[in-house]
Length: 413
Length: 80
Image (cartoon, rainbow over all chains, first blue to last red; front, top):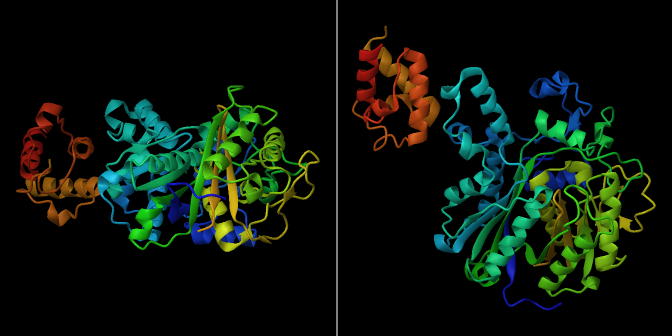
Protein backbone atom coordinates (compact mmCIF):
# COMPACT_ATOMS: atom_id res chain seq x y z
CA UNK A 1 0.00 0.00 0.00
CA UNK A 2 1.44 3.38 -0.94
CA UNK A 3 0.13 6.72 0.28
CA UNK A 4 -1.03 9.18 -2.39
CA UNK A 5 0.64 12.56 -2.49
CA UNK A 6 -2.61 14.13 -1.39
CA UNK A 7 -4.18 12.10 1.39
CA UNK A 8 -7.82 12.82 2.15
CA UNK A 9 -9.06 12.13 5.66
CA UNK A 10 -12.53 11.80 7.14
CA UNK A 11 -13.00 14.06 10.16
CA UNK A 12 -16.78 14.27 10.51
CA UNK A 13 -19.76 11.94 10.08
CA UNK A 14 -23.47 12.72 10.08
CA UNK A 15 -26.58 10.76 9.20
CA UNK A 16 -30.30 10.49 9.59
CA UNK A 17 -31.73 7.14 8.53
CA UNK A 18 -34.62 4.71 8.98
CA UNK A 19 -32.63 3.26 11.91
CA UNK A 20 -31.82 6.45 13.79
CA UNK A 21 -31.61 10.21 13.84
CA UNK A 22 -27.81 10.23 13.87
CA UNK A 23 -24.74 8.11 13.14
CA UNK A 24 -24.48 6.55 16.62
CA UNK A 25 -28.12 5.40 16.69
CA UNK A 26 -27.88 4.04 13.14
CA UNK A 27 -24.67 2.12 13.86
CA UNK A 28 -25.97 0.70 17.13
CA UNK A 29 -29.19 -0.47 15.45
CA UNK A 30 -27.24 -2.08 12.61
CA UNK A 31 -25.06 -4.03 15.02
CA UNK A 32 -28.14 -5.05 17.00
CA UNK A 33 -29.72 -6.43 13.83
CA UNK A 34 -32.76 -4.15 13.91
CA UNK A 35 -34.69 -3.23 10.76
CA UNK A 36 -36.03 0.13 9.58
CA UNK A 37 -38.59 -1.48 7.28
CA UNK A 38 -42.25 -1.27 8.30
CA UNK A 39 -45.83 -1.09 7.01
CA UNK A 40 -46.78 2.33 5.66
CA UNK A 41 -50.50 1.88 4.93
CA UNK A 42 -51.32 4.51 7.57
CA UNK A 43 -52.68 8.06 7.74
CA UNK A 44 -49.32 9.57 6.74
CA UNK A 45 -49.31 7.54 3.53
CA UNK A 46 -53.02 7.51 2.62
CA UNK A 47 -52.04 7.16 -1.05
CA UNK A 48 -51.14 3.50 -0.49
CA UNK A 49 -54.80 2.59 0.01
CA UNK A 50 -56.21 5.26 -2.32
CA UNK A 51 -54.29 3.84 -5.28
CA UNK A 52 -54.47 0.22 -4.10
CA UNK A 53 -50.69 -0.01 -4.41
CA UNK A 54 -49.34 -3.55 -4.18
CA UNK A 55 -46.42 -2.30 -2.05
CA UNK A 56 -47.42 -1.36 1.51
CA UNK A 57 -43.95 -1.25 3.07
CA UNK A 58 -41.06 1.20 3.16
CA UNK A 59 -38.22 2.35 5.40
CA UNK A 60 -39.19 5.85 6.57
CA UNK A 61 -36.92 8.00 8.72
CA UNK A 62 -36.68 7.11 12.42
CA UNK A 63 -36.67 10.82 13.36
CA UNK A 64 -38.47 13.46 11.30
CA UNK A 65 -36.16 16.35 10.35
CA UNK A 66 -38.88 18.77 11.40
CA UNK A 67 -38.33 17.61 14.99
CA UNK A 68 -34.70 18.71 14.74
CA UNK A 69 -34.68 21.86 12.61
CA UNK A 70 -36.20 25.18 13.68
CA UNK A 71 -39.72 25.55 12.24
CA UNK A 72 -39.07 28.55 10.00
CA UNK A 73 -35.88 27.04 8.59
CA UNK A 74 -37.66 23.75 7.86
CA UNK A 75 -40.66 25.33 6.13
CA UNK A 76 -38.40 26.85 3.46
CA UNK A 77 -36.95 23.42 2.60
CA UNK A 78 -38.17 20.27 0.92
CA UNK A 79 -37.81 17.14 3.09
CA UNK A 80 -34.83 16.11 0.93
CA UNK A 81 -33.11 19.39 1.82
CA UNK A 82 -34.09 19.03 5.48
CA UNK A 83 -32.41 15.62 5.84
CA UNK A 84 -29.23 16.92 4.20
CA UNK A 85 -29.17 19.84 6.64
CA UNK A 86 -29.68 17.56 9.66
CA UNK A 87 -26.88 15.19 8.62
CA UNK A 88 -24.53 18.03 7.61
CA UNK A 89 -24.99 19.77 10.97
CA UNK A 90 -24.05 16.55 12.78
CA UNK A 91 -21.02 15.98 10.53
CA UNK A 92 -19.79 19.56 10.90
CA UNK A 93 -20.09 19.39 14.72
CA UNK A 94 -18.39 16.00 14.71
CA UNK A 95 -15.50 17.49 12.72
CA UNK A 96 -15.12 20.17 15.40
CA UNK A 97 -16.49 22.97 13.19
CA UNK A 98 -13.28 23.45 11.14
CA UNK A 99 -12.02 27.00 10.74
CA UNK A 100 -11.41 27.18 7.00
CA UNK A 101 -11.10 29.95 4.43
CA UNK A 102 -14.61 29.96 2.84
CA UNK A 103 -13.03 29.87 -0.63
CA UNK A 104 -11.25 26.64 0.34
CA UNK A 105 -14.52 25.01 1.49
CA UNK A 106 -16.78 23.19 -1.00
CA UNK A 107 -19.98 21.16 -0.80
CA UNK A 108 -20.83 18.09 -2.90
CA UNK A 109 -24.22 16.59 -2.02
CA UNK A 110 -26.06 14.42 -4.50
CA UNK A 111 -29.64 13.25 -4.72
CA UNK A 112 -31.41 10.82 -7.01
CA UNK A 113 -34.81 12.47 -7.22
CA UNK A 114 -34.67 15.80 -5.36
CA UNK A 115 -37.78 17.61 -4.14
CA UNK A 116 -40.47 15.22 -5.34
CA UNK A 117 -42.71 15.93 -2.35
CA UNK A 118 -42.66 19.67 -3.09
CA UNK A 119 -43.37 19.16 -6.78
CA UNK A 120 -46.44 17.07 -5.96
CA UNK A 121 -47.71 19.34 -3.17
CA UNK A 122 -47.32 22.51 -5.21
CA UNK A 123 -48.94 20.95 -8.26
CA UNK A 124 -51.92 20.05 -6.05
CA UNK A 125 -52.08 23.68 -4.89
CA UNK A 126 -51.89 24.98 -8.46
CA UNK A 127 -54.73 22.69 -9.51
CA UNK A 128 -56.94 23.44 -6.49
CA UNK A 129 -56.20 27.10 -5.79
CA UNK A 130 -54.56 28.53 -8.87
CA UNK A 131 -51.36 30.49 -9.32
CA UNK A 132 -51.46 32.54 -6.14
CA UNK A 133 -51.51 29.43 -3.94
CA UNK A 134 -48.16 28.25 -5.34
CA UNK A 135 -45.25 28.95 -3.00
CA UNK A 136 -42.51 31.29 -4.24
CA UNK A 137 -40.15 28.70 -2.75
CA UNK A 138 -41.37 25.95 -5.10
CA UNK A 139 -38.36 25.91 -7.42
CA UNK A 140 -35.64 26.19 -4.74
CA UNK A 141 -37.43 23.42 -2.85
CA UNK A 142 -37.70 20.98 -5.74
CA UNK A 143 -34.36 21.57 -7.46
CA UNK A 144 -31.91 18.68 -7.03
CA UNK A 145 -29.06 21.06 -6.16
CA UNK A 146 -31.17 22.38 -3.25
CA UNK A 147 -29.67 20.13 -0.53
CA UNK A 148 -26.11 21.12 -1.53
CA UNK A 149 -27.04 24.77 -1.87
CA UNK A 150 -28.66 24.99 1.58
CA UNK A 151 -25.69 23.28 3.23
CA UNK A 152 -23.34 25.64 1.38
CA UNK A 153 -25.24 28.64 2.75
CA UNK A 154 -25.33 27.18 6.27
CA UNK A 155 -21.55 26.74 6.48
CA UNK A 156 -20.50 29.61 4.22
CA UNK A 157 -18.87 27.48 1.52
CA UNK A 158 -17.81 29.71 -1.38
CA UNK A 159 -15.35 27.27 -2.98
CA UNK A 160 -18.11 25.72 -5.10
CA UNK A 161 -21.31 23.81 -4.44
CA UNK A 162 -21.99 20.72 -6.52
CA UNK A 163 -24.83 18.21 -6.81
CA UNK A 164 -24.04 15.01 -8.71
CA UNK A 165 -27.24 13.34 -9.86
CA UNK A 166 -26.74 9.67 -10.72
CA UNK A 167 -29.79 7.95 -9.25
CA UNK A 168 -28.82 5.43 -6.57
CA UNK A 169 -25.10 6.11 -7.06
CA UNK A 170 -25.40 9.85 -6.26
CA UNK A 171 -24.19 9.67 -2.65
CA UNK A 172 -21.06 7.66 -3.47
CA UNK A 173 -20.39 9.73 -6.57
CA UNK A 174 -20.48 12.86 -4.40
CA UNK A 175 -17.68 11.43 -2.26
CA UNK A 176 -15.70 10.62 -5.41
CA UNK A 177 -16.00 14.20 -6.66
CA UNK A 178 -15.05 15.53 -3.23
CA UNK A 179 -11.89 13.43 -3.34
CA UNK A 180 -11.04 14.80 -6.78
CA UNK A 181 -11.65 18.40 -5.62
CA UNK A 182 -9.25 18.04 -2.70
CA UNK A 183 -6.62 16.13 -4.69
CA UNK A 184 -6.71 18.74 -7.46
CA UNK A 185 -5.65 21.29 -4.85
CA UNK A 186 -8.75 23.40 -5.38
CA UNK A 187 -10.06 23.21 -1.81
CA UNK A 188 -9.02 21.97 1.65
CA UNK A 189 -12.35 20.84 3.09
CA UNK A 190 -15.47 19.35 1.48
CA UNK A 191 -18.85 18.60 3.04
CA UNK A 192 -19.99 15.66 0.93
CA UNK A 193 -22.67 12.99 0.76
CA UNK A 194 -26.19 12.30 -0.38
CA UNK A 195 -29.82 12.99 0.54
CA UNK A 196 -33.16 11.53 -0.44
CA UNK A 197 -36.76 11.76 0.74
CA UNK A 198 -39.13 10.55 -1.95
CA UNK A 199 -41.47 8.06 -0.31
CA UNK A 200 -44.49 9.27 -2.29
CA UNK A 201 -47.28 7.68 -4.29
CA UNK A 202 -45.75 8.44 -7.67
CA UNK A 203 -42.24 7.17 -6.88
CA UNK A 204 -43.56 3.98 -5.28
CA UNK A 205 -45.93 3.47 -8.25
CA UNK A 206 -43.10 4.11 -10.71
CA UNK A 207 -40.78 1.64 -8.99
CA UNK A 208 -43.64 -0.89 -8.83
CA UNK A 209 -44.21 -0.57 -12.57
CA UNK A 210 -40.47 -1.07 -13.13
CA UNK A 211 -40.86 -4.30 -11.13
CA UNK A 212 -38.15 -3.36 -8.65
CA UNK A 213 -39.90 -3.29 -5.23
CA UNK A 214 -40.49 -6.10 -2.76
CA UNK A 215 -44.15 -6.92 -2.16
CA UNK A 216 -43.55 -8.92 1.01
CA UNK A 217 -46.16 -6.82 2.82
CA UNK A 218 -47.01 -9.45 5.42
CA UNK A 219 -43.44 -9.65 6.73
CA UNK A 220 -41.98 -6.15 6.39
CA UNK A 221 -38.95 -6.97 8.57
CA UNK A 222 -38.08 -9.84 6.19
CA UNK A 223 -38.75 -8.00 2.91
CA UNK A 224 -35.27 -6.64 2.20
CA UNK A 225 -33.09 -9.75 1.77
CA UNK A 226 -30.05 -9.11 -0.42
CA UNK A 227 -28.28 -12.23 -1.73
CA UNK A 228 -31.06 -14.52 -0.41
CA UNK A 229 -32.70 -16.87 -2.94
CA UNK A 230 -36.17 -15.64 -1.95
CA UNK A 231 -35.52 -11.91 -2.54
CA UNK A 232 -38.18 -10.14 -4.59
CA UNK A 233 -37.02 -6.52 -4.86
CA UNK A 234 -35.88 -3.60 -2.75
CA UNK A 235 -37.65 -1.55 -0.08
CA UNK A 236 -37.73 2.22 -0.60
CA UNK A 237 -36.05 4.18 2.20
CA UNK A 238 -35.14 7.80 2.87
CA UNK A 239 -32.35 9.63 4.68
CA UNK A 240 -29.03 11.36 4.38
CA UNK A 241 -25.38 10.66 5.05
CA UNK A 242 -22.70 13.35 5.08
CA UNK A 243 -18.93 13.27 5.58
CA UNK A 244 -16.52 16.10 6.28
CA UNK A 245 -13.41 15.39 4.17
CA UNK A 246 -10.14 17.25 4.48
CA UNK A 247 -6.72 17.40 2.96
CA UNK A 248 -4.68 15.41 5.49
CA UNK A 249 -2.14 18.19 6.10
CA UNK A 250 -4.95 20.69 6.73
CA UNK A 251 -6.63 18.37 9.25
CA UNK A 252 -3.32 17.66 10.97
CA UNK A 253 -2.49 21.37 11.23
CA UNK A 254 -5.73 22.09 13.07
CA UNK A 255 -5.37 19.03 15.28
CA UNK A 256 -8.51 17.33 13.98
CA UNK A 257 -9.45 13.79 14.98
CA UNK A 258 -9.15 11.50 11.95
CA UNK A 259 -11.63 8.61 11.69
CA UNK A 260 -10.23 7.09 8.52
CA UNK A 261 -9.11 7.90 5.01
CA UNK A 262 -11.02 8.25 1.77
CA UNK A 263 -8.22 6.60 -0.16
CA UNK A 264 -9.66 6.30 -3.65
CA UNK A 265 -12.74 6.42 -5.83
CA UNK A 266 -13.80 5.12 -9.21
CA UNK A 267 -16.67 6.22 -11.43
CA UNK A 268 -17.65 4.33 -14.58
CA UNK A 269 -20.73 4.03 -16.78
CA UNK A 270 -22.22 0.97 -18.47
CA UNK A 271 -23.59 2.57 -21.66
CA UNK A 272 -25.83 -0.47 -21.81
CA UNK A 273 -29.43 -0.03 -20.55
CA UNK A 274 -31.34 2.76 -18.82
CA UNK A 275 -32.22 0.64 -15.76
CA UNK A 276 -30.60 -2.79 -16.00
CA UNK A 277 -26.95 -3.28 -15.07
CA UNK A 278 -24.62 -4.73 -17.69
CA UNK A 279 -24.99 -8.45 -16.86
CA UNK A 280 -21.30 -9.36 -16.69
CA UNK A 281 -20.66 -6.57 -14.17
CA UNK A 282 -17.86 -5.15 -16.29
CA UNK A 283 -18.65 -1.51 -15.55
CA UNK A 284 -19.06 -2.24 -11.86
CA UNK A 285 -15.78 -4.12 -11.60
CA UNK A 286 -14.00 -1.32 -13.49
CA UNK A 287 -15.31 1.16 -10.91
CA UNK A 288 -13.90 -0.96 -8.08
CA UNK A 289 -10.55 -1.31 -9.85
CA UNK A 290 -10.37 2.44 -10.50
CA UNK A 291 -11.04 3.03 -6.80
CA UNK A 292 -8.10 0.78 -5.96
CA UNK A 293 -5.82 2.41 -8.54
CA UNK A 294 -6.54 5.91 -7.23
CA UNK A 295 -5.93 4.61 -3.70
CA UNK A 296 -2.67 2.85 -4.49
CA UNK A 297 -4.20 -0.38 -3.16
CA UNK A 298 -3.90 -3.97 -4.38
CA UNK A 299 -6.93 -6.30 -4.45
CA UNK A 300 -5.32 -8.30 -1.63
CA UNK A 301 -5.41 -5.19 0.61
CA UNK A 302 -9.22 -5.06 0.50
CA UNK A 303 -10.75 -7.30 3.14
CA UNK A 304 -14.34 -6.14 2.91
CA UNK A 305 -16.90 -4.86 0.41
CA UNK A 306 -19.97 -2.98 1.62
CA UNK A 307 -22.31 -3.91 -1.20
CA UNK A 308 -24.90 -1.97 -3.12
CA UNK A 309 -27.00 -5.19 -3.08
CA UNK A 310 -30.55 -3.87 -3.13
CA UNK A 311 -32.34 -7.24 -2.95
CA UNK A 312 -33.36 -7.34 -6.62
CA UNK A 313 -33.08 -10.62 -8.47
CA UNK A 314 -30.64 -9.48 -11.16
CA UNK A 315 -28.63 -6.87 -9.33
CA UNK A 316 -27.23 -8.80 -6.38
CA UNK A 317 -25.74 -11.68 -8.36
CA UNK A 318 -24.29 -9.31 -10.95
CA UNK A 319 -22.59 -7.31 -8.22
CA UNK A 320 -21.06 -10.43 -6.67
CA UNK A 321 -19.57 -11.27 -10.09
CA UNK A 322 -18.16 -7.75 -10.35
CA UNK A 323 -16.55 -8.08 -6.90
CA UNK A 324 -14.92 -11.37 -7.85
CA UNK A 325 -13.71 -9.94 -11.16
CA UNK A 326 -12.20 -6.84 -9.52
CA UNK A 327 -10.91 -8.23 -6.22
CA UNK A 328 -11.13 -12.03 -6.11
CA UNK A 329 -13.08 -14.23 -3.70
CA UNK A 330 -11.41 -13.20 -0.43
CA UNK A 331 -13.37 -10.04 0.58
CA UNK A 332 -16.12 -10.45 3.17
CA UNK A 333 -19.39 -8.83 2.06
CA UNK A 334 -22.33 -7.22 3.78
CA UNK A 335 -25.52 -5.54 2.51
CA UNK A 336 -26.84 -2.76 4.79
CA UNK A 337 -29.96 -2.27 2.65
CA UNK A 338 -31.28 -5.39 4.39
CA UNK A 339 -31.85 -3.15 7.42
CA UNK A 340 -31.99 0.38 6.00
CA UNK A 341 -33.97 -0.19 2.82
CA UNK A 342 -32.79 1.64 -0.27
CA UNK A 343 -32.21 5.35 0.40
CA UNK A 344 -31.58 5.99 -3.32
CA UNK A 345 -29.31 9.07 -3.57
CA UNK A 346 -28.37 8.85 0.12
CA UNK A 347 -27.56 5.14 0.09
CA UNK A 348 -23.95 5.34 -1.08
CA UNK A 349 -23.11 8.03 1.45
CA UNK A 350 -24.71 6.31 4.45
CA UNK A 351 -23.16 3.00 3.43
CA UNK A 352 -19.76 4.70 3.08
CA UNK A 353 -20.11 5.85 6.69
CA UNK A 354 -20.88 2.24 7.67
CA UNK A 355 -17.85 1.03 5.68
CA UNK A 356 -15.59 3.51 7.43
CA UNK A 357 -16.97 2.53 10.85
CA UNK A 358 -16.39 -1.15 10.05
CA UNK A 359 -12.69 -0.40 9.53
CA UNK A 360 -12.47 1.88 12.57
CA UNK A 361 -14.46 -0.31 14.97
CA UNK A 362 -13.29 -3.65 13.55
CA UNK A 363 -16.77 -5.07 13.04
CA UNK A 364 -19.01 -5.66 10.02
CA UNK A 365 -22.80 -5.49 10.58
CA UNK A 366 -24.71 -8.60 9.49
CA UNK A 367 -26.89 -8.82 6.40
CA UNK A 368 -30.43 -9.45 7.64
CA UNK A 369 -32.71 -12.15 6.24
CA UNK A 370 -29.96 -14.13 4.54
CA UNK A 371 -31.53 -17.54 5.15
CA UNK A 372 -30.36 -19.30 1.99
CA UNK A 373 -27.70 -17.62 -0.09
CA UNK A 374 -28.23 -17.49 -3.85
CA UNK A 375 -26.02 -20.20 -5.38
CA UNK A 376 -24.79 -17.60 -7.89
CA UNK A 377 -23.10 -15.72 -5.02
CA UNK A 378 -19.96 -17.68 -4.22
CA UNK A 379 -18.70 -15.27 -1.59
CA UNK A 380 -18.65 -14.93 2.18
CA UNK A 381 -21.55 -12.67 3.24
CA UNK A 382 -21.80 -11.75 6.93
CA UNK A 383 -25.14 -12.92 8.33
CA UNK A 384 -26.63 -13.85 11.67
CA UNK A 385 -24.26 -11.90 13.92
CA UNK A 386 -21.91 -8.97 13.23
CA UNK A 387 -18.40 -10.18 12.50
CA UNK A 388 -15.24 -8.94 14.22
CA UNK A 389 -12.58 -8.17 11.66
CA UNK A 390 -9.23 -6.45 11.31
CA UNK A 391 -9.40 -4.38 8.14
CA UNK A 392 -6.75 -2.28 6.42
CA UNK A 393 -9.00 -1.28 3.55
CA UNK A 394 -12.62 -1.67 2.46
CA UNK A 395 -14.66 -0.72 -0.59
CA UNK A 396 -18.22 0.61 -0.78
CA UNK A 397 -20.15 -0.06 -4.03
CA UNK A 398 -23.00 2.04 -5.42
CA UNK A 399 -24.80 1.64 -8.71
CA UNK A 400 -27.70 3.55 -10.22
CA UNK A 401 -30.35 3.59 -12.94
CA UNK A 402 -28.68 5.00 -16.00
CA UNK A 403 -25.73 2.63 -15.72
CA UNK A 404 -23.86 4.71 -13.13
CA UNK A 405 -21.20 2.84 -11.16
CA UNK A 406 -19.32 4.37 -8.25
CA UNK A 407 -16.95 2.67 -5.82
CA UNK A 408 -15.10 4.33 -2.97
CA UNK A 409 -12.17 2.89 -1.02
CA UNK A 410 -11.49 3.65 2.62
CA UNK A 411 -8.46 2.84 4.72
CA UNK A 412 -7.79 3.09 8.43
CA UNK A 413 -6.68 6.33 10.05
CA UNK B 1 -63.55 45.60 8.54
CA UNK B 2 -60.51 45.36 10.75
CA UNK B 3 -59.19 48.49 12.45
CA UNK B 4 -55.49 49.37 12.31
CA UNK B 5 -54.68 47.63 15.59
CA UNK B 6 -56.36 44.44 14.38
CA UNK B 7 -54.54 44.66 11.04
CA UNK B 8 -51.21 45.06 12.83
CA UNK B 9 -51.91 42.05 15.04
CA UNK B 10 -52.98 39.93 12.06
CA UNK B 11 -49.99 41.02 9.99
CA UNK B 12 -47.62 40.24 12.87
CA UNK B 13 -49.06 36.72 13.09
CA UNK B 14 -48.43 36.20 9.38
CA UNK B 15 -44.85 37.48 9.66
CA UNK B 16 -44.27 35.18 12.63
CA UNK B 17 -45.62 32.18 10.68
CA UNK B 18 -43.60 32.89 7.52
CA UNK B 19 -40.36 34.34 8.88
CA UNK B 20 -40.29 33.22 12.51
CA UNK B 21 -40.07 36.75 13.86
CA UNK B 22 -41.65 37.31 17.27
CA UNK B 23 -44.95 39.18 16.91
CA UNK B 24 -43.75 41.80 19.42
CA UNK B 25 -40.95 42.75 16.99
CA UNK B 26 -43.43 43.51 14.21
CA UNK B 27 -44.13 47.20 14.90
CA UNK B 28 -45.21 49.95 12.44
CA UNK B 29 -41.82 51.68 12.10
CA UNK B 30 -39.94 48.48 11.20
CA UNK B 31 -38.71 47.98 7.65
CA UNK B 32 -39.47 44.49 6.32
CA UNK B 33 -36.10 44.19 4.59
CA UNK B 34 -33.71 46.30 6.67
CA UNK B 35 -35.05 45.66 10.17
CA UNK B 36 -36.84 42.31 9.98
CA UNK B 37 -34.47 40.72 7.43
CA UNK B 38 -37.34 39.38 5.31
CA UNK B 39 -36.36 38.37 1.76
CA UNK B 40 -38.36 38.90 -1.43
CA UNK B 41 -39.65 35.30 -1.46
CA UNK B 42 -41.02 35.62 2.05
CA UNK B 43 -42.60 38.99 1.17
CA UNK B 44 -44.60 37.24 -1.57
CA UNK B 45 -45.78 34.64 0.95
CA UNK B 46 -46.72 37.35 3.45
CA UNK B 47 -48.64 39.29 0.78
CA UNK B 48 -50.62 36.22 -0.32
CA UNK B 49 -51.56 35.39 3.27
CA UNK B 50 -52.47 39.03 3.97
CA UNK B 51 -54.71 39.08 0.88
CA UNK B 52 -56.57 36.03 2.19
CA UNK B 53 -56.80 37.29 5.77
CA UNK B 54 -57.96 40.85 5.03
CA UNK B 55 -59.73 40.42 1.69
CA UNK B 56 -57.54 42.87 -0.23
CA UNK B 57 -55.52 42.72 -3.43
CA UNK B 58 -51.84 43.63 -3.24
CA UNK B 59 -50.48 43.91 -6.80
CA UNK B 60 -46.71 43.43 -7.25
CA UNK B 61 -46.05 47.12 -8.00
CA UNK B 62 -47.87 48.05 -4.78
CA UNK B 63 -46.08 45.37 -2.77
CA UNK B 64 -42.74 46.87 -3.77
CA UNK B 65 -43.83 50.19 -2.22
CA UNK B 66 -44.66 48.66 1.18
CA UNK B 67 -41.32 49.30 2.87
CA UNK B 68 -42.44 49.25 6.49
CA UNK B 69 -44.98 47.36 8.55
CA UNK B 70 -46.84 50.69 8.94
CA UNK B 71 -46.99 51.07 5.12
CA UNK B 72 -48.63 47.64 4.89
CA UNK B 73 -51.13 48.40 7.65
CA UNK B 74 -52.14 51.67 5.92
CA UNK B 75 -52.46 50.00 2.54
CA UNK B 76 -54.63 47.18 3.87
CA UNK B 77 -56.74 49.59 5.90
CA UNK B 78 -57.51 51.80 2.89
CA UNK B 79 -58.16 48.95 0.45
CA UNK B 80 -60.44 46.69 2.51
